[in-house]
Amino acid sequence: MAMKTVFLLMWIVRSAFSFFPTQESGKLGDYSHQSITERALYESAGSFIQKYVNAGTGTARYASRSAIDVTGEFFRGDRSSEAVFGTVVETIVWGNNNAQRTYAAVAMRTMNAEMIFAGNLLLQSQRDQIIVLSQSPTPDWNNIRKLIGEYLFTMQMFYSNTNWIETHGNVTSSELGIRGRTLMSTAPPGVSTCAGCPYSHPLIDKHSCQNNILVNGQYLTSGYLSSQGIPKPKGNDTAGYGKCSHGGKNDDYSSVNAIGGINKETSDSNLSPHFYLHAMAGEVAVDATAQFFVGEVTGLLDQIGPRLFGELIGLPVACKDCLKPGLSLAYVIDTSLSMSTDFQQIQTKVAETIQSALRENQSTPSDFILSTFSDPVSLNTIRNTTDGYEMMSWIREMKQEGGGDCPEYSFNGLLAALKIIRPDSCLFFYSDADPKDPELERVVLQIAAQKNIHIAFLIKGTCNTGLPFLDRLENATKATCLKQSLDKGRRKRHADETVIHQPWNKLYSFGEPKQDRGSILSVLPVVSAGAIVIVLVVAMILRNRSKVSRYD
Image 1: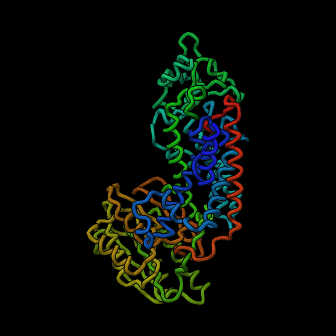
Image 2: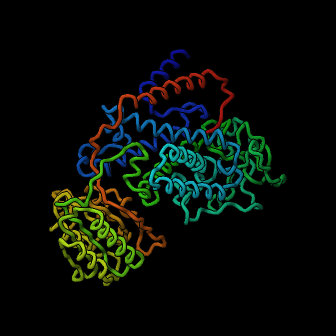
Image 3: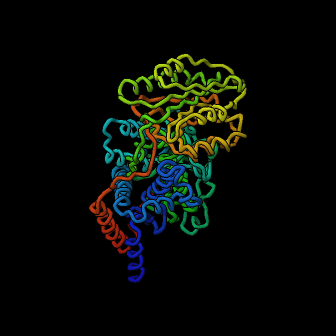
């Protein structure tokens, strides 16, 4: 026992951010809020580093590596920067665990007692608040990170305490916590959601409660937990049906019809009747947490933009001013009829951008480029000027025409602009469709790379072709700090959602930061955290094994 303890302590000291159970975990090795959140943050940071911090120039360095490996490689030899990131992770995890300590008895927070609709409304409100606070003039990142931890607590509980996993398997919910999207309905009060199951430890070990949920595929449901103070509705004692219980030896409702339970919080059958699904629930929670940070469109990265996201996760980036003399400022715009939803807004925002640059800057880009495209290709136009006011008039005079089917001649439009754009300049692309001219992909990629062009896909749609031409272009070129310009929206043609554009001041693009990213003092929080963790783990090993709590 002593040797095992020493080995465990050595393992923790060696890797301050490895995954290990928190005090709240049920069994050594189980998924916990801490392990789920830490892993998702490392994966999210790796994706961010690959796509933005080292986009284009860092491709070879990180080729064929997992996102977690990318994060480790990025921090190698830079202990102060790793400490800054570690403090961010620690703060978010603190928010996780504080939510557990504060709200463990609140069914809405844990998604128990079929309080799923209320829990989802809470998540929507918290997510909106996180985005608004992040976009404020002076974000309080420390409090925002704590709020994120609180949000993630409830979101992760959705996968351990409801029947989502039993119904959908290893797939995340794209509706959970997203305002404007409809989550699967919760079972009405009078509907029995569970059948009683043989509830003794040896039988549970043999999956006696595996098929006890009656509403999979019809409704969402979750179990009632006696310690949360919400009375469990009376079931049918004759048939053994009723509302589901949370389950486990500490839940008095597990012996009330419907007998049993459905939680997947641990891999311990004494605590979790659906213990055999714990690993799947944990993996899905990791995926959902990573999607909250870097998922397309709805993720924080797309919602607040790379510059602010970098500040949020402790990876500040050096931004490039796209309005400097010697550069071109280029716009490539889809003018087909399908762009009606966004067209007028695009015209207004682009004109405002140029007008602001002319008014606020003593120096402006050396020239402006406007490339428009549609279908047929004969409708494509290309113009450039050194006069910003002339560019504004062209933007205001743009007309929509052409289209008909979904793909458009976007690579033709990009190629026309790339041929005349100055090196190291910024290009802004707007289209809701896939390219109709994929044969030009290679030459577009080649010229964009040769000229080191920073391309911002402010609107990028899809025709469901399954061919990621624009994705490849986006990944192969340097990106820009989009949120200081316009929201980036990836959507399907004719989707119901509208892309909301935000006001902005300057355009930026990423290069790896050159400034000092912290002093050796930044390592102190990590060392302190490591010491605290060692104490907690020793206490966990020595404590009475009957005093365990759940996956949360």
